[in-house]
Length: 498
Ligand code: AHR
Image (spheres, rainbow, N blue to C red):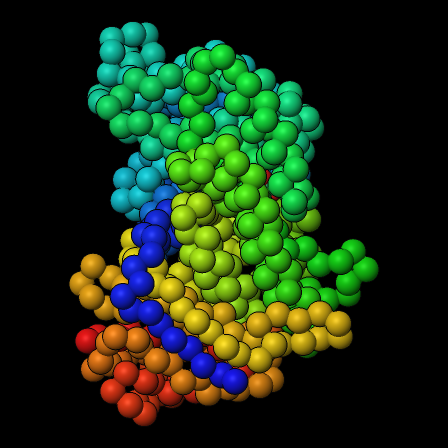
């Protein structure tokens, strides 16, 4: 019953590295006291940004970072965040009315992106901003023509314009971004598109905020697209975003770290459901864009639990266990399976918020199990997706089930195959014969992420509870077949050389 064939000559789509993107919102302790500790902090930092986090993000080849929100973006006014820091206004943050000092603004964010060598993805304010405000921001950022705005940028320390590859026109405009109908948002999208111009040589992709938080069948995107294509003039629309969070049922008593097998199943089953959501939304886009030029961008995703006891509810601070590592691994596989349409994604959120990569406490910083998945999977970035045939048992709970295994394979430009395998079952190990069609397997090396308990997580006292280790649970049965022993609740990454 268990069998995997990797079609090594199949060479499908390129896996866009932007699927491995991240998201940092002015929310709770993500920016302030997370990424940014300030220039006078004793914590090791570069111009206020934590050195340890910069190093760790570079180590996973972070391709892009989305900023400044989220819901925050639709209340953000960019002029608050430029010029001398002492003169920047103090505002109330959308999230819990926390003080927003504006110490991190446009220049600081772009400085961070340069430190990380990643592409900036801006979210513009449609909900409470104006068309003029957004067009001015883009001119300020990207124009080298002489004008008051480019002079202002120079006065603030930046001589040449930045290249901004990704620009979001609003965020969740069906919800916190204005509670609009798809048709109303489509009208606004076209209006913003008309005035938010491209000034630079690099095309700034314009991305529509998806209308489908709960629209798992793509009906809102259908209405939005229907409305956009009616225009007499072509509209610049290169991306449509959707958000997908895993929430626990309201009556649930469990949390990020306290759960049993039933809740383990529930969360992974919810993670698996994104496959259907992507499929439905992709089918809608296929009607309007059969050549698949428009990117489907999942620019917020993750498992969202009740906050850690004793932390402010609006700050969305939560722990992160082995279960979340499996959520991340399986979700990334699903994105890659849909990689012809899903070209970008952003985990929510980078530090101290929802399913984060890092948790911080004063000068301490820990890597979460989710971080390690991005590390184990980084070889998939820009590699060629290989088709596979997988037969495996179902993982069943009550009347519901999902495949017990989640597997992806890719081929790098250097000829290495990266095979990533997750055993989603919390109790059953499995041995999987893996056949590499058309390839002799020579050198194999591997790493595994597993833990003592399902609830294992890293803490400031014990930061090494869930870390990848060398994996030796495989042997070659024939020249092209590898037998892989996958423990229950584990993630394995194998590099296979010819
Ligand atoms: O990531 C937290 C919030 O979730 C974002 O601000 C919003 O876009 C979404 O509802």
